[in-house]
Length: 188
Image (cartoon, rainbow, N blue to C red; front, side, top):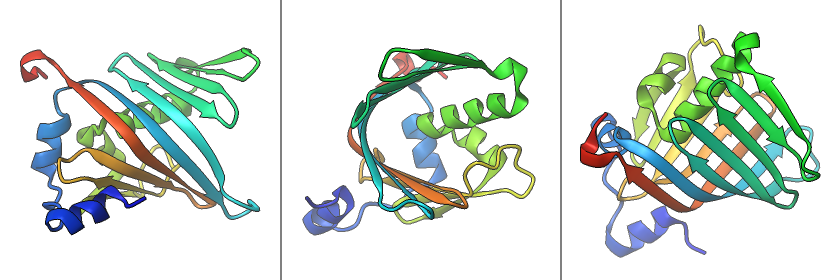
Protein backbone atom coordinates (compact mmCIF):
# COMPACT_ATOMS: atom_id res chain seq x y z
CA UNK A 1 0.00 0.00 0.00
CA UNK A 2 1.34 3.45 -0.93
CA UNK A 3 1.84 5.94 1.84
CA UNK A 4 -0.46 9.00 1.71
CA UNK A 5 2.55 11.27 1.17
CA UNK A 6 3.88 9.18 -1.73
CA UNK A 7 0.40 8.97 -3.25
CA UNK A 8 0.02 12.77 -2.99
CA UNK A 9 3.39 13.23 -4.67
CA UNK A 10 2.42 10.90 -7.54
CA UNK A 11 -0.99 12.49 -8.07
CA UNK A 12 -0.15 16.15 -7.90
CA UNK A 13 3.22 17.01 -6.52
CA UNK A 14 4.40 17.19 -2.98
CA UNK A 15 2.05 18.52 -0.31
CA UNK A 16 2.39 22.18 0.64
CA UNK A 17 4.85 22.77 3.48
CA UNK A 18 3.46 22.48 6.98
CA UNK A 19 3.46 25.78 8.85
CA UNK A 20 2.73 26.89 12.38
CA UNK A 21 -0.16 29.06 11.17
CA UNK A 22 -1.62 26.24 9.08
CA UNK A 23 -1.58 23.75 11.96
CA UNK A 24 -3.02 26.26 14.42
CA UNK A 25 -5.84 27.03 11.96
CA UNK A 26 -6.54 23.33 11.35
CA UNK A 27 -6.37 22.10 14.97
CA UNK A 28 -7.03 25.23 17.05
CA UNK A 29 -10.81 24.69 17.13
CA UNK A 30 -10.66 20.93 17.76
CA UNK A 31 -13.62 19.64 19.78
CA UNK A 32 -13.19 15.89 19.16
CA UNK A 33 -10.97 13.53 17.27
CA UNK A 34 -11.30 9.83 16.54
CA UNK A 35 -8.80 7.65 14.73
CA UNK A 36 -7.94 4.08 13.82
CA UNK A 37 -4.20 3.63 14.28
CA UNK A 38 -1.64 0.97 13.41
CA UNK A 39 1.03 1.09 16.12
CA UNK A 40 4.53 -0.34 15.79
CA UNK A 41 6.91 -0.32 18.76
CA UNK A 42 10.58 -1.06 18.18
CA UNK A 43 13.17 -1.23 20.90
CA UNK A 44 16.87 -1.64 21.34
CA UNK A 45 16.31 -4.72 23.49
CA UNK A 46 13.38 -6.26 21.59
CA UNK A 47 13.76 -9.27 19.29
CA UNK A 48 11.20 -7.91 16.82
CA UNK A 49 8.75 -5.01 16.47
CA UNK A 50 5.48 -5.21 18.41
CA UNK A 51 2.45 -4.39 16.26
CA UNK A 52 -1.00 -3.46 17.51
CA UNK A 53 -4.25 -1.86 16.37
CA UNK A 54 -5.60 1.08 18.34
CA UNK A 55 -8.77 3.15 18.40
CA UNK A 56 -8.31 6.69 19.69
CA UNK A 57 -11.16 8.87 20.96
CA UNK A 58 -10.14 12.36 22.10
CA UNK A 59 -12.09 15.27 23.58
CA UNK A 60 -10.72 18.07 25.76
CA UNK A 61 -12.11 16.30 28.84
CA UNK A 62 -11.41 12.64 28.04
CA UNK A 63 -8.92 10.55 26.05
CA UNK A 64 -9.54 6.87 25.32
CA UNK A 65 -6.71 4.81 23.85
CA UNK A 66 -8.14 1.36 23.16
CA UNK A 67 -5.83 -1.38 21.95
CA UNK A 68 -8.01 -3.80 19.98
CA UNK A 69 -5.35 -6.29 18.78
CA UNK A 70 -3.37 -8.36 19.52
CA UNK A 71 -4.47 -7.96 23.18
CA UNK A 72 -7.37 -5.78 24.29
CA UNK A 73 -6.62 -2.99 26.74
CA UNK A 74 -8.03 0.45 27.45
CA UNK A 75 -6.25 3.54 28.76
CA UNK A 76 -8.50 6.42 29.80
CA UNK A 77 -7.25 9.86 30.76
CA UNK A 78 -9.91 11.93 32.47
CA UNK A 79 -8.85 15.06 34.30
CA UNK A 80 -5.61 14.20 36.07
CA UNK A 81 -6.52 10.52 36.39
CA UNK A 82 -5.16 7.70 34.25
CA UNK A 83 -6.99 4.37 34.28
CA UNK A 84 -5.65 1.23 32.60
CA UNK A 85 -8.03 -1.69 32.05
CA UNK A 86 -6.47 -4.96 30.94
CA UNK A 87 -7.89 -7.76 28.76
CA UNK A 88 -9.52 -9.40 31.81
CA UNK A 89 -11.36 -6.19 32.66
CA UNK A 90 -9.23 -5.41 35.70
CA UNK A 91 -8.66 -1.67 36.12
CA UNK A 92 -5.82 0.20 37.76
CA UNK A 93 -6.22 3.93 38.42
CA UNK A 94 -3.43 6.42 39.03
CA UNK A 95 -4.06 9.99 40.13
CA UNK A 96 -1.84 12.70 38.66
CA UNK A 97 -2.52 14.95 41.65
CA UNK A 98 -0.45 12.57 43.77
CA UNK A 99 2.47 12.46 41.31
CA UNK A 100 3.66 15.61 39.51
CA UNK A 101 5.53 13.50 36.91
CA UNK A 102 2.34 11.63 35.99
CA UNK A 103 0.39 14.91 35.83
CA UNK A 104 3.05 16.35 33.47
CA UNK A 105 2.99 13.19 31.30
CA UNK A 106 -0.82 13.29 31.07
CA UNK A 107 -0.65 16.96 30.01
CA UNK A 108 1.95 16.14 27.37
CA UNK A 109 0.03 13.14 25.98
CA UNK A 110 -3.11 15.29 25.65
CA UNK A 111 -1.03 17.90 23.78
CA UNK A 112 0.41 15.32 21.34
CA UNK A 113 -2.96 13.81 20.54
CA UNK A 114 -4.74 17.14 19.98
CA UNK A 115 -1.78 18.87 18.30
CA UNK A 116 -1.81 21.61 20.93
CA UNK A 117 1.28 23.40 19.61
CA UNK A 118 1.53 25.83 22.54
CA UNK A 119 1.62 22.97 25.06
CA UNK A 120 4.08 20.91 22.98
CA UNK A 121 6.34 23.94 22.53
CA UNK A 122 6.73 24.35 26.32
CA UNK A 123 8.70 21.09 26.38
CA UNK A 124 9.98 20.79 22.79
CA UNK A 125 11.73 22.93 20.17
CA UNK A 126 9.59 22.85 17.01
CA UNK A 127 11.07 22.59 13.50
CA UNK A 128 8.94 22.64 10.35
CA UNK A 129 10.46 20.44 7.64
CA UNK A 130 8.32 20.17 4.49
CA UNK A 131 5.33 17.96 5.34
CA UNK A 132 6.66 17.24 8.84
CA UNK A 133 6.80 18.90 12.21
CA UNK A 134 9.78 17.69 14.24
CA UNK A 135 9.80 18.39 17.97
CA UNK A 136 13.06 17.94 19.89
CA UNK A 137 13.09 17.80 23.68
CA UNK A 138 14.27 20.97 25.39
CA UNK A 139 17.09 20.47 27.94
CA UNK A 140 14.94 21.93 30.75
CA UNK A 141 11.82 19.84 29.92
CA UNK A 142 9.87 18.55 32.92
CA UNK A 143 8.94 15.22 31.27
CA UNK A 144 11.80 13.40 29.58
CA UNK A 145 9.91 10.37 28.24
CA UNK A 146 10.33 11.13 24.52
CA UNK A 147 13.41 12.78 23.00
CA UNK A 148 11.99 13.44 19.53
CA UNK A 149 8.50 13.61 18.07
CA UNK A 150 7.93 13.54 14.32
CA UNK A 151 4.45 14.51 13.09
CA UNK A 152 3.79 13.75 9.37
CA UNK A 153 0.90 15.44 7.58
CA UNK A 154 -1.01 14.87 4.36
CA UNK A 155 -1.87 17.60 1.85
CA UNK A 156 -4.97 18.63 3.85
CA UNK A 157 -2.92 18.83 7.09
CA UNK A 158 -4.52 15.68 8.46
CA UNK A 159 -2.09 13.79 10.65
CA UNK A 160 -0.74 10.78 8.73
CA UNK A 161 1.81 9.48 11.24
CA UNK A 162 3.41 10.28 14.56
CA UNK A 163 6.76 8.88 15.66
CA UNK A 164 7.70 9.04 19.33
CA UNK A 165 11.37 8.34 20.03
CA UNK A 166 13.02 7.74 23.39
CA UNK A 167 16.54 6.63 24.26
CA UNK A 168 15.66 2.93 23.97
CA UNK A 169 12.65 2.68 21.65
CA UNK A 170 10.61 4.18 18.85
CA UNK A 171 6.84 4.03 18.48
CA UNK A 172 5.24 4.76 15.13
CA UNK A 173 1.53 5.56 14.97
CA UNK A 174 0.12 5.35 11.41
CA UNK A 175 -3.30 6.99 11.23
CA UNK A 176 -5.50 4.82 9.00
CA UNK A 177 -8.67 6.84 9.58
CA UNK A 178 -8.83 10.24 11.23
CA UNK A 179 -12.01 12.21 11.89
CA UNK A 180 -11.92 15.72 13.35
CA UNK A 181 -14.84 17.63 14.81
CA UNK A 182 -14.47 21.39 15.15
CA UNK A 183 -16.14 23.50 17.82
CA UNK A 184 -19.22 25.28 16.45
CA UNK A 185 -18.25 28.63 14.99
CA UNK A 186 -14.55 27.87 15.47
CA UNK A 187 -14.71 29.11 19.09
CA UNK A 188 -11.53 28.61 21.06
